[in-house]
Amino acid sequence: MLDKTDRLSAGATLVETVMGAIVARIDSRTLTPGAKLPSIRALAASMDVSKSTVVEAYDRLIAAGTIVSRRGSGFFVAGTTRPLSLAAIGPQLDRAVDPLWLTRQSLQAGPTVLKPGSGWLPSSLMPDAAVQKALRQMAREHASARVHYDTPLGFAPLRQQLAWRLGERGVTAGADQIMLTDSASHALDLLCRFLVEPGDTVLVDDPCYFNYHALLRAHRLRVVGVPFTRDGPDVEAFGRALLDHKPRFYLTNSGLHNPTGASLSPATAHRVLKLAEHHGTIVIEDDIFADFEEEPSPRLAGFDGLDRVIQVGSFSKTMSAAIRCGYIAVRSDWLEPLVDLKLAMTLGNGHLAAVLMHRLLTDGTYHRHMDGLRAKLAAAMGETLRRVRALGLTPFIEPKAGVFLWASLPNGLNAADIARYALARDVIFAPGDVFSVSDASRSYLRFNVANCAHPRIFEVLDEAMRQQ
Image (cartoon, rainbow, N blue to C red; front, side, top):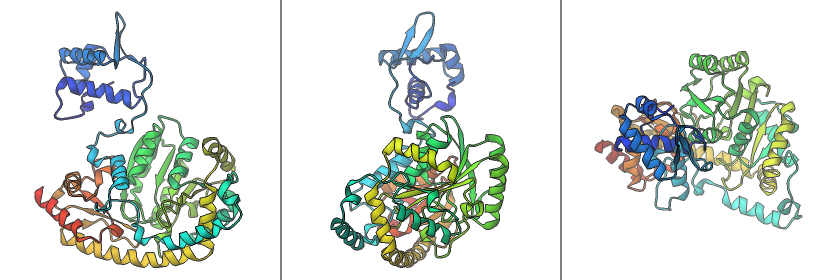
């Protein structure tokens, strides 16, 4: 049933508000072709408008071909199913602070646009010369890596290397428990298809990586947020959410959490796993930032032994976003159906990327690159902390490592307003609203410290704060 919470724009007329609410439900597939709409009387009551307003709204929608009227039966959604519109699902944010808009803008922005809100490293910090060298070597070798599909699980030498690397972080997994994917996002998409049905409930951290929201909405899932603290999820709130919502899984970053930069404490990890076991809930641990850490923090998959926890990761954030190579580490009895699902969707993962990544891992390139990168990021983190504090922002924590700093604006300023002001001046910030399923992060900004060297970023931020 539509109600007064469906009002989409403060500047719209009442008729436009009613029309917009119906169209949004159709675009999000909440109302499908042939679905019956509320009667004029019922819709007027639920949206707190007059019956004449609903009559005019229905008349306009009929004229536009969006709905049809059947004498004696009522009003129905017309036509065939519309293409899914993610923007129509979930909270109606200003498009300038929408998660998908933020991703698009960051990806297509020109070289003069500054991107302190982006989620990836600048090209200058990537080992491009080493990648070029590896590609030249591969070009001279046998053609199988360049022209053939990969095996169902993925390139075995890379899986063996990944098993060894997971073991260094306390996660016991054999190569036969690891399946390669094209990215961590690809891995999460497969797991959604594997574990849930449309309408199921899942838990995420609040705040969490904004693309989780978009991905989970694309799978037509109900998303519930759990407040995130400096030690991990709020355990009491996590327990209540498990009891109240009976989620199919909980999705989180244990190490160097995005966006807060926090890492899970051992005590919190233990309590989370005990609760998940008691309620029969699966945990998906996105460990994409693991290699930024100097010393590994606790991992849920390490404590659990891949019984109830599934771990995913990739090299997009550390090595190259263009080398699409990720993985899923999972209990053995779930691997074969996951392989079948991957083959049905893509006929496998990128073999060329897997062979290239294996070479970079085993010839020492990756190790040398990460040693230097961690030192550069530590210096960038210190400088960014100094600059945000000088402007009166308060960091959520001082991250031990990684690329993200989560900081609140002074005096309760709205980060979305700051982002809109900065956007007009070619600076892309990441406001807290896009990371949160509640309104708890509206005064926060996420800074990518690797992209915060230019002084104009903080000049524009200072201007924007003064304007509010």
